[in-house]
Length: 209
Picture 1 (tube, rainbow, N blue to C red):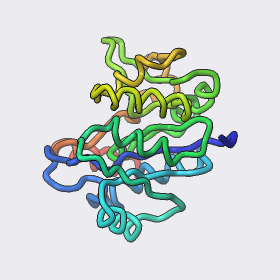
Picture 2: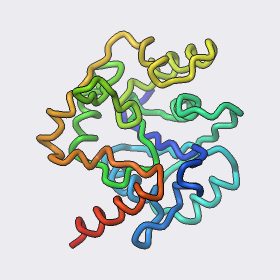
Picture 3: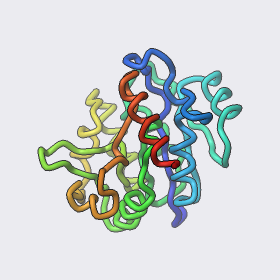
């Protein structure tokens, strides 16, 4: 394993609530996933997009700019955990950021902090005051996490937590602390519904003024 960092962007979800494949939804002239790529690419040495099919991969290659490679999640199981397994199998970095494709307001400062801390832990995961965690905006030791995910999938335990609980050294970073870097915590805004999409478009419009 080279001493570099990777980003794994999951784009293989079904997008049932939005009604269309969300990764290429046009937002102010750019595909949704492009916003994620634009933030993360300068922070890492390689970017991996996990897709389900060759056709989806071809559409992303045509629509998106920047240097990235594709990893294919060919499993019939629909789970972010299985997509993460495909991504970690492709990643060469010591540390990998694991990200969803639908968070267009990612904070580079938050991601940089997670990456930096990730070199000392098996996982570094944001945690809300109510105990909820953000496993799809977190940094992971690639080798150890790949093993933990494979064990969870083999046991038919398909939540991200089922892999995380197999990791020995996990650091939870309070979202209250992350407010110092991203006061409104827009980094966690995602697009699951048409209402989410409308809200994110308004936020991006106001940000660009």
